[in-house]
Image (cartoon, rainbow, N blue to C red; front, side, top):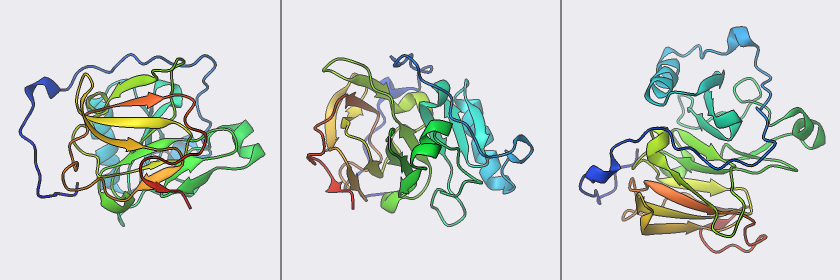
Length: 224
């Protein structure tokens, strides 16, 4: 991860917890992969070892492509980068959102974060400039308060350096569990190539407010 000058002291309250039971919307489906089962393991031993380590650290996931591990019926996905540091976007390395989505518009990517005609994601990156491992979400609970999630549940605590939000969700990111210690806000359809030295490698939790602001960008740079 990018090492800025600011490093916060260890917070004992951030010991990794078990996987958080998230409030999921009804009717979610498992993404359909275009990758043949025989080719699902990554031929790069270093990348495959990183995926195996992730699945061991966070039980309940499944490798769905040579570069991806999926959790909670495909609503949380962690994507591992290629040798150049960027996550892949080709069909041989990434899953298709769904057959319906693929036939409607295909899947597009913004710095590796997927979006389409019906579904958009918000993604967090391990390094600045959208490099390194990428943790992507699309989940949202009903109600005005959104859904609270923890990076500690996904082996991604204190690791975020950049982000992309292709959705109309509004995301508030926090330094601590609880949540507390506000760090930054992610507006709809926006990106940030670096969260700033003061916020780098500090994120431990976030709250996603469902419904969004329907395209009004508040935090980050507008998608182009």
